[in-house]
Amino acid sequence: MLSLPKNVWVLTVGLSLMMSSSSLVVFIGGIIGTELAPSDELSTLPVASIIVGTALFTVPATLLMKQFGRKKAFLMVFTASIGFSLFAAYSVEIGSFYLFCLSLLLLGMSVATLNQFRFAAMESVKNDLVPLAASTVLLGGIAAAFIGPEVALLGRPLFSTEYVGSFLLLGGLFASGLITILFYKNTVQTEETNSGDGRSLSTIIRQPVFLVAVASAAVGYAIMSFIMTATPVSMHVMDGHSLEDTKWVIQSHIVAMFLPSLVSGYLIRKIGNIKMILFGILAYSICISIAYSGHEIGHYWWALLLLGVGWNFLFIGGTTLLPASYEGSERFKVQALNDFIIFGTQAFSALSAGFIVHALGWEMLLVVSVPFLLVPVFTIIYQRKMAKE
Image 1: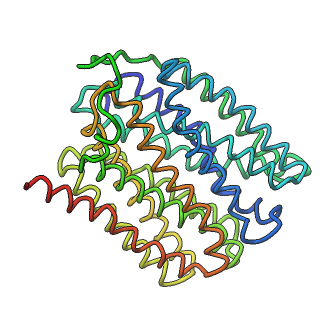
Image 2: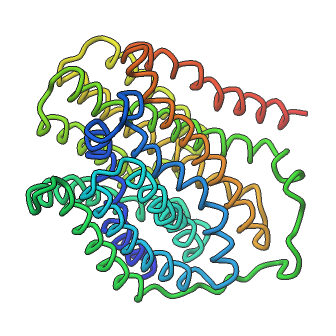
Image 3: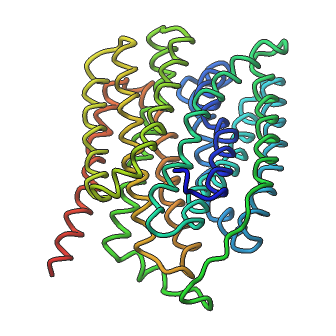
């Protein structure tokens, strides 16, 4: 890892500060939603809102980078995110559920931009270091797993209205991340084709390698978001476990999402993307089995731990496989489509989570997740079939 360029480390530090917005919202979004929402079924709408915002702003964020370069786009979006954090604090202060959801929808713009960090890191290194660069940047999520929930609790009692201070402190994290990104340097890629947009998207998406890459990352994100979004509601609101225990489970889950990045880059180079993806599916299968077996803290903790590991393997496996589907001049539009599919799927799953866990229960939510595990398996089978023809 010491051989990686400065850009990768700058992006890693920036991610650790600004991705805290996601862990903060996952931890307290459903709790605030339960207090402000007009009905229980809408309690997870705030968490879903930041995910929907991520999906909506994925393509605009990518186009912004194509127009102005990655660094200027990063700086513009994260400056705006400071304002969005203040908007969220104001929404909580006045007790407006829908304004709160709108503020988190806008914060989805920052998450959509943060998701481009992995591509920016991959473009900063030689081809043989691409898996290592992508996994290293995601290590910033380990710090974010602790920073977000701790900031949420630290800010909770600062004002008469709980959690107003949490979002004010979040604005400070964005300001710190903004300073970090000033040290990022745009890369100048040597491309075989600098003119035009390359092949059409319809041609690119028909490639089996594209289907495997997108299906793996999309299913990984969708199932992770589906179960994770419902966990604080099921664990704290329905089962009565303490806020501290709920925080610990969520923090452990987010650490498990990013800690495998210490070895996942190496594993991909050793065993390949496909086996990495299959190991991710196996981790998800065990996760669902444990979660289905009981409602004790241990069931939630082990299940969410494996949920994080499975996400890491599926997401990094799919992300590092994606460049095999495009040429240099095609990268922005393919990355935009890839992330739109991933986060659009994630948004739908997050929106569904609150309704399903309240209407059908925790066990049924887990059962609904199972068939989706087969989607990346089918794309892998299809890829191998096409390779033999």
